[in-house]
Length: 296
Length: 283
Ligand SMILES: Nc1ncnc2c1ncn2[C@@H]1O[C@H](COP(=O)(O)OP(=O)(O)O)[C@@H](O)[C@H]1O
Ligand SMILES: [Mg+2]
Image (cartoon, rainbow over all chains, first blue to last red; front, top):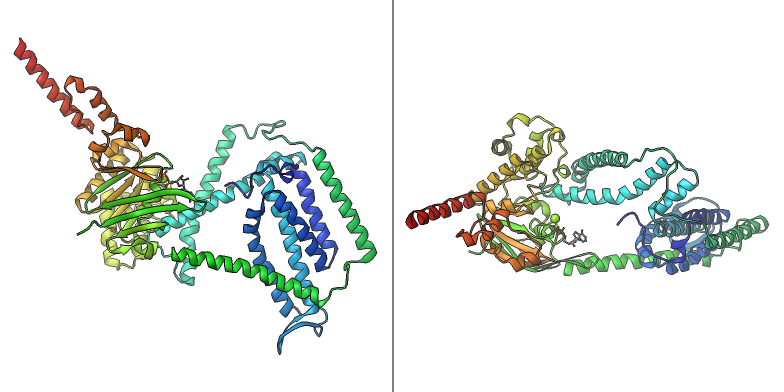
């Protein structure tokens, strides 16, 4: 249950973390080169086979729904209310004074798919990389060992603190704290929940620093690592592919510009409705599960 | 009248299809002290967390008096079932011991007079008079544990659940906890303790429930249950050392019905006396 890492032995799992970091950065580069929802969509979709091949489908689908909630809000709210560009170009008139505008929808769609593609790439990275390997990669990039460890331990502390928070919540409920009370009371309840959390976290960190010292953390000189990793043929192949894509994308951008094809209303409507459909699937799934829980 | 706390056919499955409890049936009446025993991961905590609604049954029911634990919030059930967490740091957040003691009572909306009275009572019980103004985090772990227990007892729940109360306690702390449990029993409370401290169980001479892999293996008086060696082995439990000693000495005429050091001494004196009598007769 440490961090979001999912154990596996796929191609992606075997890549060097450094390769994967470059991969995430190149995806970010791609989606910011162009201002074209279709392109961003293609990038997102082309990442899905990698998700599947890495055996990360289930954890990915579980996590990505939070992104979809965000994306749903972005495309809907921007499409309706963002006053950018030509506000007279309407794509979908809902009521007399409520309509999805063409330029605003483009913006919303571009932002949405940017979030989805970058989010997917990042999830691929986080889910296929053991936290220790990430720290090692940073050390290889000449990040000081202590800093790399700090980043690593943050990753590992988050789930621990999460578990701790749950226990504290239970301990306070056991003292008749009504956590299901109304909003104002809930805000007041933050103190009984957070005070012990902070205190125990500080205690834990303090203790951890002593444990580390006892095991020679601050000794000087080069350190070895239990998990060794090397950049091999696989990484070079992958990096070459990324470089080729990047080259192609940059050339395309220089020649054609930020928008590849004219963006039609049909494209925008598909993006909007598509996101709505995915969101409602997640929503009904959630509803169905809660109803079933109530019934049982 | 049926027992105050009833567990009917309780099964609990954690997310990820982890079956932590399977078809547990249990009835606990007023004034009973019950020790829940079993190795780590056997499901003890899962069982007792159902008593105040922290966990809801996957199947089956838990009744607290006439309340079905499934249908009430933890906050509400906690007025009936006090749960003392193993790590008292998790519940401590107020700047003084006195405020900690008052906190639960304030949550259930008692009036000032009653709160005062209850705080005084638990203060006396645990002899906390000198540290009422102290910040709980400045106390040692034994005192902090006592404050944690006192703050739950101040709510005056009918049932008190203690999760590993003596773990990490010094001798004096364990003794006090034992005294408090005995006192609560006399007052008609139900005390349920999850523990690995067999000596404590022996000295309390209470009912024990043995859990192994989520199933109830045994339920009865400690004295009887501890004689079932095959069952204890399956649950990876060791009876109190003094009981093992007595069993090893049965060939010398020692009765193995011994649970505490005091009983052992008495038994030793009895055997010794017999021995002397026998010697006198023969000579
Ligand atoms: N929150 C949880 N989620 C999933 N499994 C859990 C959770 N809590 C406990 N378990 C599992 O349930 C079983 C019983 O745990 P627990 O009741 O804590 O045992 P005990 O208190 O006897 O040591 C263990 O196998 C444990 O791994
Ligand atoms: Mg436990």
